[in-house]
View 1 (tube, rainbow, N blue to C red):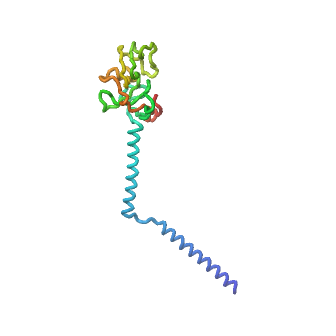
View 2: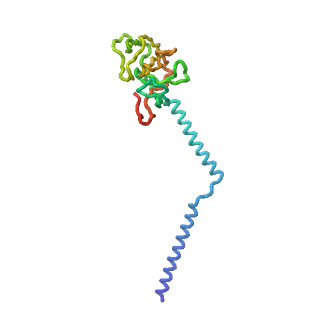
Amino acid sequence: MSDEIKQDEAVAEEVSAAAESNDTNEAAAKKDEKKPLTKQDVLKEIWSWIETIGLAVIFAFIITTFIIVNAKVPSASMETTVMTGDRLIANRLSYIFSEPQRYDIVVFKFPDDESKLYIKRIIGLPGETVHIVNGEVYIDDSTEPLRTDFLHEPMRTPDETYTVPEGCYFMMGDNRNHSSDSRFWDNKFVAEDKILGKAVFRYYPFTEIGPVK
């Protein structure tokens, strides 16, 4: 008889423990249930999105104003180095601690209309005399012509001489037979402070992603 009583007590304890476990699970489930959003919750969520978007806009403004120039190649004047419609990134910080160098490809404000951005290669440096003779470019009294390995084709242009003012640069396109550059502008030279950055990277078209040289 006592064994039966003990068995009944054990069963009762198991039932009680199971009931307590169910109560605990139900309480946890109720706790996990989402509370309906209040007006204050909605406003907090909206404000959080506004902050995120605002920070992104400020960050993008700082990047594009002080660090990079996002430029689209407008014409065929630099083919085949870069093609019409290519999108480039120019580094605004390239010339913080150094001067622009010959053969750099740069983005600058067009001297005849500064509302337009041009992309050309630096050929003549401040104070130099640029001589164009028989389709070749010579600097000062040098008898060695400048590099032409980046040209689309041999240049056909009248012989000319240009003296570059201090603080300015003489620009030419790589597609010289189809390039509007320093040879033809009214204001033939680009002041250093009008150079916005050195073209360093092409990000479009995606099949041509890579550094610009």
